[in-house]
Every structure is written in structure tokens, then in C-alpha cells.
Image (cartoon, rainbow, N blue to C red; front, side):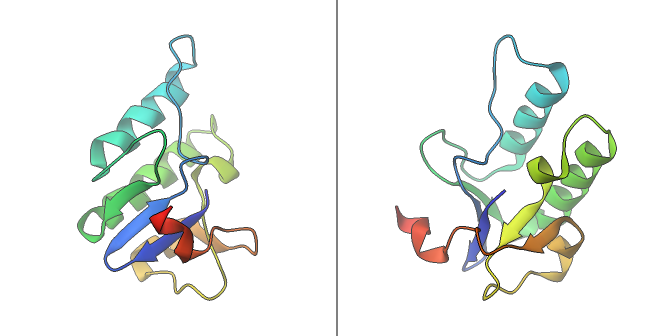
Length: 108
């Protein structure tokens, strides 16, 4: 999931955030509701926002869903641009990617 940090807020690109589907799988829909429940803001047409206070919980949640074996790594891993420092409490579930969204996209 393309991610970036501005201030003390982690953003996940809206195209990479999980989606809810009425006829979707139970694990994927649970993943959607779990992330939405800890997000500061989670709208379909905007980046999802996670405040710094919940980053440890976000990390544990992402790892848990990945370890379940039902979701692929690309669905739970946070991808940052190489110029973006990754906070310690997100490192185990994050990577650097040239394709990650630039932080200036946060305002769009």
C-alpha cells in the first residue's frame, strides 16, 4: 500500500486502502472494518489517515492479517518513497518503493 507521512499522520493512498464488498470474503471485509475502525479518517475518495498514537496497533494489525495467510504481502505492506524515513514502529511491515506515492499527493 502506497503510504507517506506528513506531520504525525500516516496516509495510505485511497486506491490501495481495503474495500468493503457485500459479497466479499469474510477476511477481506474484516480487514476493511478493522483498519477503518482505527483510522482517523477513512473515505473512499481520499487517502486514509492514521495518527501516530495508533501506529503500533496498525503495525500489529497489518502483521496479523498477513500472518493469517489470506492476504498477500502487497495488501498489508506499507510502501514509502526512498526519501521518506520509516518510523521505528512501522518498519517491520514497511518497505521502500520507487512507485510509492509522493508526499505532495497528500493534499489532492
